Figure 1: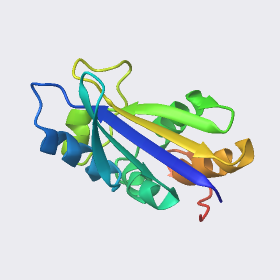
Figure 2: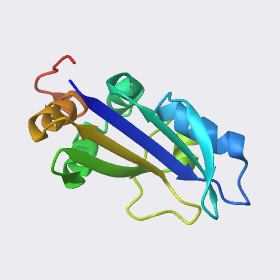
Figure 3: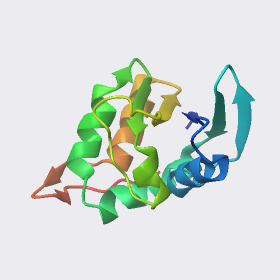
Figure 4: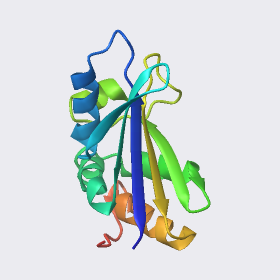
Length: 140
């Protein structure tokens, strides 16, 4: 399965780079690099393995339904995009801000080789539930 995960977050002058780095890697353990396009930002890439922590957090926090609706709403072809709160990620939790946060959010893009592959990844990350419990867990 050909899955590419991209994650990024701006580092504003009032923020500590290491804390933004911690926020990202708490959710997705990827190697980050700093790039500056006017405002510095941290960028990283990964694969399916880099989503395993997110997979676990969705279950621990019991937010499968919310996560599924956010991931599904962000689908464009064989890619989905969504935002995560930097502050919440810093403490190792997941929150989907409704809009871009004042100091910026963590941006995540998951790209698959096809729309079917992307749907499999979404089903793996966020299976359908009944009363908050997964109907069927699939392995990837």
